[in-house]
Length: 326
Image 1 (cartoon, one colour):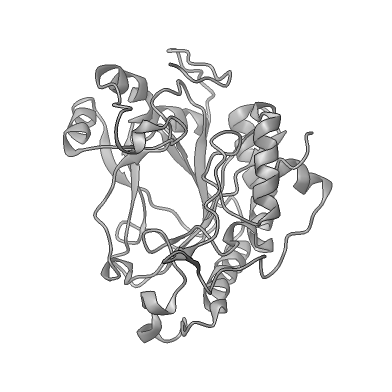
Image 2 (image 1 turned 180 degrees about the horizontal axis):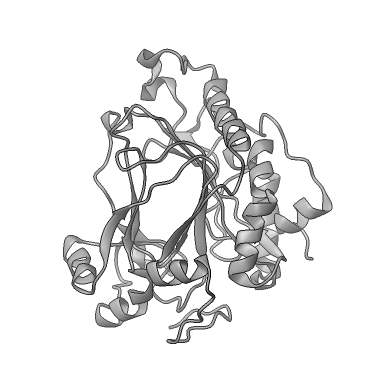
């Protein structure tokens, strides 16, 4: 069963003569200096301040406190899916940066966009020692969804060199998405693949070898503060922990055309927003909240009912948040 939202699935990609060609051919692109160094530093500091706001013993100046016991829970020691992290004022400021919006408007051919309620990533240099995991190459688009239906991204706020923490991609894998799954249909009878709405597919070593045999290669994506990193949700990717002493800070950004969201999903987003909760990176479909963090069936005492600083609610904000139509 093919799931479509009207996106073209033409086998003949359009040539643009700009960075969009790299995005379509390689599956990712790094847009330089999308926000100023000053703005990048502002967002970076807001994230560090947020992490230190839980009164749980964490002190950014004291590395002995950089432990799981002193930090709020995070997915794979970096992504903060709870604690109203997605809706802090500075996060919505970043989502509304004109140059960030312009990039997605150029991709989709419209400036009437809606945003995901995606989150942040603050990865400390010792993250791997806090129960770190091995690389987990995957895609974030269900194999049944044909064509380019979502472009993921993040506003990079710290140095991300070859040895720093950050994104790794299988360059050139996105254009081979349909070919791979035609040869290896997903088994929807077991594991996370049993539900179509779960836009996630994990790859095994043999799958990586298949992509490499088709000319793809593993690339550590390097970026500087203020850069915008974009990748196709069909692109095989994963994150790596830092091998240096730098803290990784990024704000995830993802937008799709407002015309693609149904009224049913808009109502879901409204409810999630009212609870200040986080979703996946999908802005218009697969609308699911990460809810509040629970520990042994009880609410995490560090959980919050609302952001420390609520965003300013404007007409532009309500449309971008999909709280009302354009």
